[in-house]
Length: 620
Image (cartoon, rainbow, N blue to C red; front, side, top):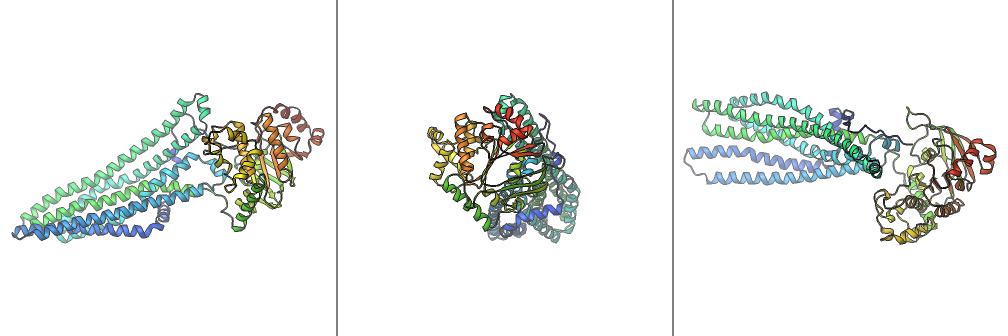
């Protein structure tokens, strides 16, 4: 069972649900990304500061140059020194910039690796509550914004702050009156900058949320591309994606507007300061309070002040932009994940089981078939939804085949989800080999299980990659043996590149029956001790269905096989049949016993099973 939320066509996404983090948590998260690279960032900052020092020396050299010109003294040495300062400052800043850009890319790489590793370990309910496209956007778009805020913003804040203070000190030493004039103008116009900052953050936050919505809508469309085309829904789906794109554009434009206000306020402050200093400074020169050389040097410092102020503006702006990305990344980091990877014992057991089974080409483990017990299990997918299981109890010893039958919605497929620990039981216990599945390391538990889902998904890539997906160390001989068992050998011979043929997105180049056989072969190659088949033959023709049933019957002699079935031919092969209805187990027995003793099963056997001989019926 899965729950999806679908918004009406062409309705702009609601971006108010995106997270906001307090400043302290934002800085804590920022430091976590920044910490592994702090030594390199410190070196880059140091080089940037050397460039700042070289820049601060230039107005003093210009002042000395003007004074020497006034005294008609040679200026060759000062010109050479000034040139050396400019070249050295530029070279040092270029080296620092390269280090920081390289580190920025490393920050993005680390963040993406961490986020991908975590998202692939998410619990299934978390994935079902979240749009996959939005999660992908956090890995791609949001981590890109993280690059600027974790390096450039930090360095710009340090170098800009120190450069700003150092420049003000030099200006104060030259003329405190002119410094006061400069600061007065800057503070006055800086109010516009302070007003713009929170609006940049809000607009960026909403823009990123809308970008995530675009990814979600596109993932939804391409995930059901044939259905979209067959339904003539291209225009409607285009309108939905365009609505999200317009929302992203609207908030992006708003962010650009406030960034323009912030940037122009800095330029305006410097220009007005220049005019004020020029007027007041000219009067002080006329009064003999300062010299022309000192006024020129002061004006040079004033222009030099643009760089550290711009760096501070850039740091604050990038922080506002990046804080939205950090909040979205942190939200993804807080999603609940499954247990961490097991220790050597669990991993070794899982690998050994797979290898031993693959050597026989069907099932294995070397530890015998698994047993499954449900003890008064209750379960619901969310607190606001009704119970799917209500006190479900049954025992399945191994080996052998057990079939689960019942009306749609009876809770049959949910049995498999609880055994695999895709979900946790709300009440009661699920035992595998007499051990509560919650006490199994997830990798060890799933290493003993082969699972064929209802829709038999096939991944993009080659046929070989799909077969080896659950058993990457299987040999060519083992693969060939499984191909024969799953009746795929003829298909491989017909394909242009054999096992290396690309099967397309979600196996689009294969038929439904071929995809099902690929899924079955993949599960058998894994060498499971417990095999879960959820309507694994529903899309097969009669000949291939019979052949695959024979394989399953053979496997069931050594392995515990659980089957959700709607075909009488499959059900009658089972050693035991569990009849479910309304989330409960109403009867357990053989086909003959249940036909004689359970009215619901008798009805199913007479109607649903017989009617589905030529066509599978999906169930939950």
